[in-house]
Image 1 (cartoon, rainbow, N blue to C red):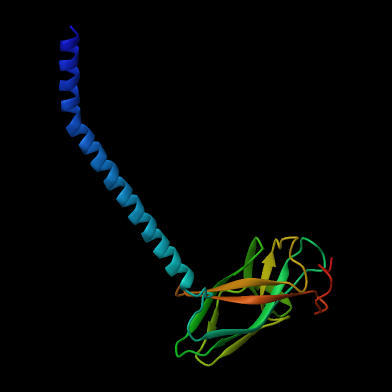
Image 2 (image 1 turned 90 degrees about the vertical axis):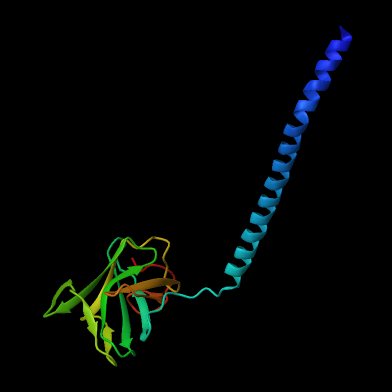
Length: 184
């Protein structure tokens, strides 16, 4: 009886040898594939970190003197003022604005003492449009309590062709100074 068990055991072992070889080969292939993926991911990560981080930039358009003026009363909207210049050779149409750390931003214009949402702002080549008190400006709603005077935020302008321009904003109080916090 022990001879027959031994024979069965040898037969089973002989049948399992090809399966073990296949499993071992599969394990080696899997290990090689994972190692290659790891190297590829590492190379991609290294290449990505070598690329300089740049803000969104619409060719030919520039912004200067950009500042967010905080509201006097907490919860009220603030306003962004800046000079927008089209140094390109094509008409540019400003379609919208986004200000970091706010719920929303809208382009407004004051005309005849009445403020309203501006339909759009066109900039001819070589033209500068001033966003200033009493004229065009960006109203900023729901400014986060963490935003303080003398800090900075980012504003992104979106144009009708889908291009964007991101710029830093100095945060100020209504009095124009940095102050020590929100002028509530």
